Structures are given as structure tokens and as C-alpha cells.
Amino acid sequence: MDFSFNIPSGGLNATPEIIATLARRGEELDFAYVGIPDHIVIPRNVQSPYPYTKDGTYSGSGHILDQLAVASFIAGQTSKIRILTSVLVLPLRSAVLTAKMLSTIDVLSNGRLTVGCGVGWLREEFDAIGAPDFDKRGIVAGEYISCFKELWTSNNPSFEGEYVRFTDITFEPKPIQKPHPPIWIGGESPAALRRAAKLGDGWFPLGGNPRFPMQTVQQLSNALDKIYRYGEKVGRDLTKFDLAYSFPGSFTGNAEQTIEHIRAFKTAGVQHLMVSLGATFTDPVSDTLERMEYFASEIAPYVNS
Image (cartoon, rainbow, N blue to C red; front, side):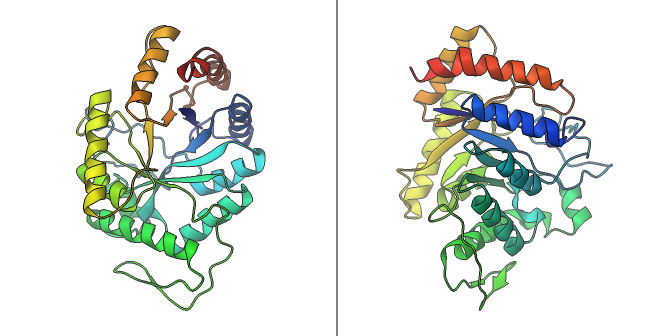
């Protein structure tokens, strides 16, 4: 099992100095991935229920850097740590342009990109930027992923879908990673599980969804079994399928209890664990660095021992 953390790409801590400091220190401490959240705008009047709080409220400020620009910045600040879109909201950007930006990041990082992606939850954001129909976002996401793969792998790419169409184009350079950067599907709903089985190289759920809870080992295992069954139905070999898991909140208890808790998720098949280190919009960066040091010295070495 390896470990990752999200950097604060929004709020007062979203500065070049803090982002670079956290990414470099994470690399030095052998964190495997640095994740970057995604929004383009936050409308001032949000009625859409946020999936990861019990009452559906969302506390984001709207002060947020573009995810893919931040990914490119981190690529230039580091040399080893992998860069994870955590997660890319697929319908918010045009498909071909997004494929080009992701391919560019993979080239500039020398093959360190992992594409965590999802369909989004904020209807008002879709409306504000003229994204495709929010209610069709699952169909759009599926087309976009298929479009990415076509552009990244074909020497003469063409695609004919409801939302994406192209032919007779050159798409270069291809990503460094072959056949393409890993695609981890975010989300916990039945539709997300089917999407992961059909199109993903891995599944990347967040544990804190009250509607589709994934907070326990049993809940996670049951959902993973469904993905494998879906995979069989569509004829996919999922023997090399990745399971990444974003743990909701912080682990409680002492170091020994935390280690045992994480080992239980490892036994359930979690290969990549995203942990909360307090890298929020407002927490002092010194506090985040202290948590990183603690996790790297007192927790991580003993999980795999």
C-alpha cells in the first residue's frame, strides 16, 4: 500500500510557495501521490446538495486555482511523486482540449500523471460555464474517457459520439505512459461502479458519502465485488484493477490503532490510500507539514511491515 494527500489548490493556502513546499516535502517523505481537487467556479447561490456532508452543505469559497494548471506546476517542482487529479470533473472542459492538457502534463512530468475523474455534483457550476447538460453528465463522462483513450493511443484518431466528434486529425505528442495514464473512476453510486468496471483502470471512492457509504472495510469490499461482476458482464479483465481510497476525515486513536485500521483496508484490497493531513484552505502550512512528518515516520513504515 502507498499513500497520498491533497494539496490546497484553493483558499489562502493556494500560493506557489505553499503548493511547492507541500509537494516537495511529500516527495521527500515518500508519499506516492499528490492530489489536486477540481472546480472552475463556485456559484454564489448553491442549491445542489454536496454528496459528502450529511446535510448537503458545501463550504468551498470559490477561490480556487485551475486543477490542470496546478498539475503542470507541480510537475516542474518535483521529479518522483505522482500527480493525481483528485478528481477531474470530466464535463467541465472540452474533451479534446482536456486530452491534450493531460497528455502534456504526462509528458512534462515524464510519465507521472494519474487521471482520477468523476462526473461532478454542482449543477450551478455546469450552468455557469456552459457545460453539457448536468443530467446527462454520466453519458458525457463515458464519451470523454473513450475519446481520451482514442486520442492517446491511435495514430489516426477518430470519434463519433453524441457530445464528441472528430476525425482526420493529428494528436501529438502522446502521453509517456503506455497505453495511457491510468484512469481511476471516482464516485460511489451504482453508476460510478459500472463506469469503473467498463472504462477505468481503477476505482477511487471517497468514504464519506452518506448516501452511498464506503466507510467500512465491508462496504468497500461489497462495492468492489460489484465492480468485478460488472467487469465480467462487459468482458473486461480486471486482474490488474487498482483500488484507491480516500479516507474521510482523520484516523482516530494512537499510532498502533491507526496502523491496524489502515491494515484492515489493505487486506480488503486497497492499494493506494489518500489520507487527510490538514492541507485545507486555512490551516497553517506548518501544521500540515507536522502531520506529514508524523504519518511518514510513525504510520506509513509499519503498515507494510
